[in-house]
Length: 452
Image (cartoon, rainbow, N blue to C red):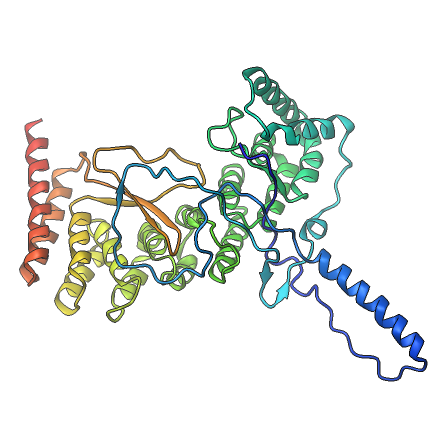
């Protein structure tokens, strides 16, 4: 367990104009008065500057440290590593100041605070017991874990009366990292209290979750809050969710969240997004190629397909070009526009062979998924051809699964038709061999299905 009390990245937009501009004194009457005014003014300025800077985080829960440089364009393809990754270094460090636009973000928790009842001594004590620093210093016994869980349930049982006490802790912008596999069932204290809000439900709890959504810059928290709010009030907070994702991606793109995996943000867009998020995904494709392409491919009703086609039609050298081709191949059976674009691209453009080899596997049934580093879903299955990928420069984490069973004869025939069309126009022996291999595997699956 990590025994360091950590500060979380704060809000993106609550006070974009915290700095004030001062005009120099032009008509000082007495030199001594001028000096006194200057000293007092400087001290006041320093105090305001200090309050405008959220303290830097000393630890984190979301992902591995990387070089801290702005992510560049990832390659068209990467070499996978079979099995789950095992490295667990220290977490990413948030900047001392998180900017929104051209201004400095002020002390957001104080500004974001909304009027609410004073916590009762009992609920405040429950939160204090739940968040005591000693919980992170040594492994917990089964009895201690049971007592902690009982206290959390007691807090939940207080209903809306517990919301104010929970808000006090969340507004501290601090957290205890409990480490992976914690016996408490949560990766951190904030995660536990956010889950308590989900269990409490009601207008007060939803209001605090929405307020936290507006102030946190932690991708995993945004994903968790989005899912909880959607479960409790479907559609009611979609605009706030989209704003939180968009602004946090803007922070990450400008290098303010170095080391944090933004995959959970793309999963939010994939789950709750619509055509309105396409421009954001297309804009971010050069930085997070796989995340953007996979999200575009999985938007409802094929709303992301035209953008994928545009990305694949980029001139040679475009960082997201090959990835867009693979994503189109993955949904070619589902959307005729995608399969038609693949055939046109095969005729008219020069892609690296590795991109077409990957596309052949995707048409054959291989699927790519964004890895859930927020811990909201089960990890990918081990073995049986599952491959995990990590792009260091852009900190993208995803995995692929081979073509499983369950395809209907019609789906197999559709895939084989697309492969035959590409074979007819392919001039590369390597690509033709990949297309033929994918076709042979599909044919075998079809024969096995018929035999059963």
